[in-house]
Each structure stands twice: as structure tokens, then as C-alpha cells.
Length: 291
Image (cartoon, rainbow, N blue to C red; front, side, top):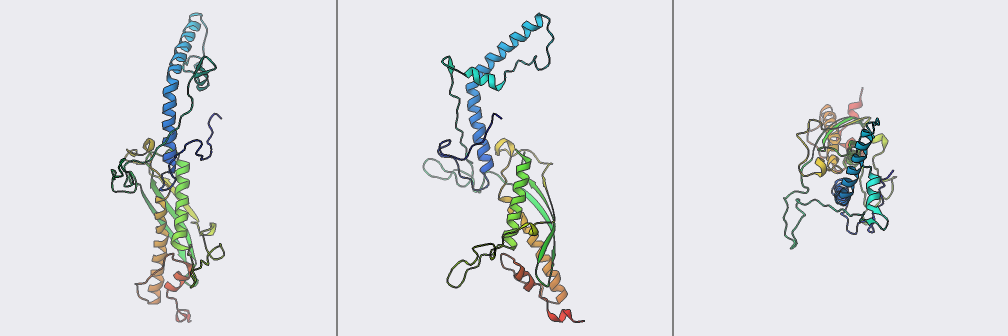
């Protein structure tokens, strides 16, 4: 009840980092952590005083023979008491607001004050890892596809919030399914985009999602990420690539259909690999349907 998350606003942080590159969660978490560390430094003298005061009161009650509960034996002051002590009107008023800011510092985008690169030649400060396996069913007459099952294992280091991380992985995987198989921008001869609505442009819907989707975070982790925030790793865009497991399974199904049709095992597929492209690639002929 004492903690609320406000909207992104330059009144709060004038120059907060951008939200691209999958760094949003860790940038926000580290910025909040740094602000909390600064606040704790301000509050620590008051916390120490109240702790000594509470300990003295406990000892006095024990001398009087009073029986105290475990909670009453704890000299640690409450957060409300510490803040109140630091903000006693006219008596002692501390600065009880802090602004935290953080951005990755060792990737290929970082520079010194003169603009010279001083990071590593990678997109991020560290690597994330994942694996996925998918099973699909393809109707070779129509080209329609159904993902029966997908299993994903992903490394997020020491997860700050497993629920959010798993949700991010699921969302990125759904995004990848659309990218690889359905979302085809169509432009006419005049260069006009003809896919300006879901009648023509096909984002993946519930029917395109795997009937069974399991996501697990890597448990036998070699250890927390040495650079990540609190040992975690960012997650957002990287699981997108694992959706290629669906496209790979579709390609295997097409290859099997072509083998049955006596067609060449070599074939080309466009991106995205839409329903019509799958149907044509299967090389089904009317002769196959003869009794």
C-alpha cells in the first residue's frame, strides 16, 4: 500500500532511458534500486537511533518482568517510524526524494565523453540463451498450419519476477510466430500499402497459438549474470527467435509432403511463410488424388 508505480513522466525523471533493446525492466529496476540506496543512506542515522531507543525500551520492560512476544522483542523500527523521524516538522526534515537512473555501460553503443566507443562489440552487456522445440500439423491441400505443441527453456539468470519473465517469453514467441508465418505486408504497383487492417494483414490470433505451450526458466543455472541487475538477465526480444522452431517444423512437414509427391527436396520459401506459400511448396498435384 505504501508503494505505487507512476506513469513515465519527465517531471519524475527528466532524462530516463528509452525502452528498446529488451532493457526496460532491468533499467527501471536498477534505477529504482539506486534511488532506494540513496534514500537508505539518508534514513540510516534515524534508523540506528530508533533501533537503540527500542532496544533500551525492551531491556527496561524485561527488567520489570514483563513477558514480550517475538514481535515485541524486535528492536528494528518500522519504515513508517523511520520516515516520520526523518521528517519531523520544524525539528528535523531530510530530503526524502531521490531520482535513480541507469543504462547499460559495456555494450557497443557506449562511449566516453568524447564520443569514442569504450564498450564491447556486442549489442548488450551479456548473452542470453534459450531453446525451443515445436510440433506442427500441416494441411497439404490448403496450406493451413496448426502448432500442436511448443516447449521453451530460457535462461534469465536469477529472475527478478518469474511471472513477468515467463509472460515476456510467451509474448515474444507469439510475436515470432506472426513474423515467420502470417504477418505479410502487401504493397501494390503504386507502392500503396494494402494491408492496413486485419482483413488483409494477419497477426497471429488464439487459433495460431500452440495448443500446448510450456515455458520453463533454466533452473540449473551456472549462476547469476555477473553484470545483470541483481543477477538477472533481460528478457523481451530474444525469445522471438525461438519461434523459428515452428517454421522449422513446417519446413520439415513440407519436405515430407514433397517426398510423397516425388518432388525435388530443394524448395524455396518466402518470408513470411504464409498459408498460400506453404500450399504451393507442398507440390500437391491432382494426380496424387486419383483412385
